[in-house]
Structures are given as structure tokens and as C-alpha cells.
Length: 199
Image (cartoon, rainbow, N blue to C red; front, side):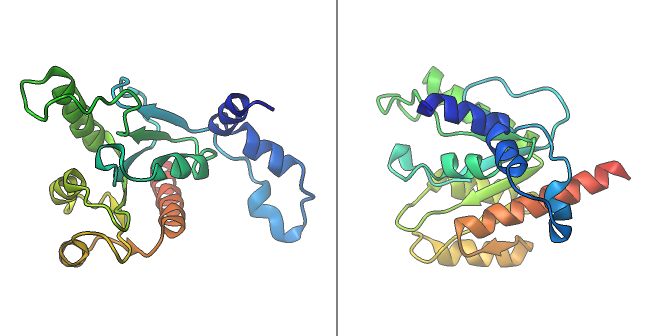
């Protein structure tokens, strides 16, 4: 199968459904056999934000002008079967020649998209990768520290880990040691939000 076809299946949730359908269901697999939501939708900056009421997850954290590993892609694959909107600020057409000033149209467009997406999100999954600096993510952490929406992974080796840990402790932000642990925490939070909506 071509890579593009597999990617389409991942984001439609079809790959997860295929895997689930190929496994025998035993008594300990009742949870796995329950119907899953439709596939997640990945929305990248500067695409318009969906106007419906699906749960949304903003993928905040290390990008460093494209210098950090693309952890957002891995995260999106892991949540492909959750039926949520994944808001990814990592812009495929980013041009480093754009000046980081308010008068630069594309720079302004990026910043305004991120601000709107953060506000729209039900969950902010923030990963601050070892070896990165992510100053904009630190700004976003400050803006949303008290919102109750942030779930945070900041492993050893992040530039200002001490500052991050102290802010997280002050505002009661849940912290995780690894990206996989953050993924599981986001899944759990989404389940809680669905239950709250169903009441």
C-alpha cells in the first residue's frame, strides 16, 4: 500500500478499525470491542478551525522553527481513532524568511491562528522536548496555565524545565515523563469530557 493511502486510512480511523476487526474478542476484550468514534481530523495552521462541537486537542510544544522532531505527527497517529479534531500549529509551508513582527502578514496569520486554536481547544497537549527551547510554547503555557486544559510532558533536558515544573506545580497542571504517557493522559481526559457531555 502506498504511504499516502496508509496515511489517509490512519486519519479516517480505518486502520484502527481493521486492526480491531482482525482480533478475536474474548471476555477481557469487552472494552476493546465497544464501538469507537469516527476517525480524528487533523487541522494544520492556517486551515480554518472547524465550527462543529467535536472535542478538540491542540498540539502545543516544541517546534523550534522546524528544528525539533515532528512529535505532532506521532501524536496524531496515536489519537487517530478518537474522533476528535487535532489542531496542529506546525505549518508545512512555513518560510523562515518571514519576519517575526506584527506587520508581517503570514507571521500574524500564524500567531492569530494559534491564539484562536488554543482558545477553541478542549485539551491542550503540551510536549516540551529535550534539547529544545520552544519559547512560544512557554508563552502559551503562561497564557493557559490556569485554564484546566493543559496536560504537560516536560522530560529532563528541556531548556527551562525548572521554570516549567514550578509553574505546573503552582497551577496544578498534570505532568508526565514521556510522550506515550501524555498520549494516554489525553485519551483519559477525552473520555472524561465525553462522560461529562453525556450527563
